[in-house]
Length: 112
Image (tube, rainbow, N blue to C red; front, side, top):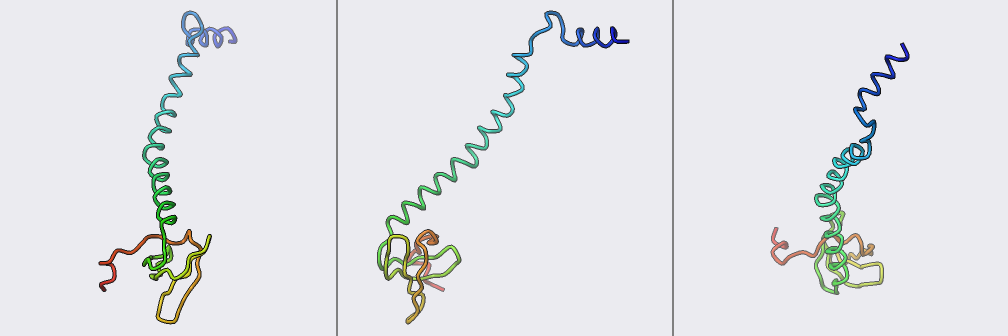
């Protein structure tokens, strides 16, 4: 019985008994392709968005009309190193972290 199992294993390997190097490299090709697809569809666009967000935060100045990540609309009245003071109503100001500014409002966004 043992001879039959060994003979079938030897026959499955084929003549020469090797070839595992090329088959193992060939089995890695799908994983490499998946990584490349993930890189171009997920990682690269995310890095581009992060660079744009950082550039927008670096360009903030007093008087800019912004929208926060939580949806609060306001005007910047004071800029700190890590914080921003927003005026959200006539006598209402809030201090938030700079990273929570989502975007600068366009002039036509004021129309409701």
